[in-house]
Length: 396
Image (cartoon, rainbow, N blue to C red):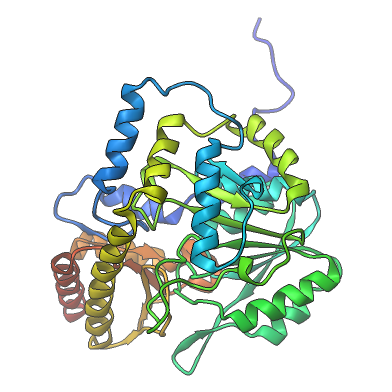
């Protein structure tokens, strides 16, 4: 006799409502094709610097394969605190730093710390989908606040954002420099947002993983919320080793938070991942402390700036291209006249042009009709990709 169950096995509603990654949907259709120039993922086409890889390899040779502290190796926490303090000119105690198994894990942990089902969360969009979906996974209500294009530049309507941040709002989530648009917040906007949220008891979660990728003359780092906030106020800042040190596959990040939350973070890390791998943390420690690090970052920035200039200049010469200006990150976010379905267009580009771009709809409804092109690639590859897009446009 076959036992019958009352209902089919299924995940809970919040998970069922999650959309699969549309970036992955496009990439999965073309990753096995050697004839595709791929710019769909947000990562450099260069490997992690050798001194970082060597540090991790040495840690493995020394059998550093056991559990570490929940909040990370003390030496790494101290190194992160020193790095952030020097970079932004603010004193940061290592006790406020938690090492996480990736930046996205830090985003999840920060949300788990303070959000409850039904809480109202405002997210500035378009945005990397993980950032907006994490609060929804936890049962929060997500209010999307879109950037706009004004005078050929991505723009934040600050007055309207502050009006949206009402007394019943639990958290504001910002990503600057922004993925996918490259929009970068100003210190004046940060100060206004912090003052408003401080008055209303609203948490601010600031994702600053692209802080070293700014292209404003005279500025080497994007402004950080940490430069304006008091140590104990409701601010959490997420960062990662992925972009600055080309360590996307390593899955190592950090979270800066008020001291009273640190013991609670320690518990949550235990119940999520227990700890980041020791040999991975050794690589992170080398990234922050090796004398070669800053020179490597400067060289990477120069290379990306060169590729950026080549791509943006070439895109603006193509017919029907709309490409608003922005100051940071590693992406060109643009649209083509006559194309409104970004997922269908991205798939066509893979099949018909051998060009792999991310569909704008992956970053929310505000991104529909747009495409994202990662320019952290060699100039020759960028040039080849532009040639593919030009031929596609000439044939359509």
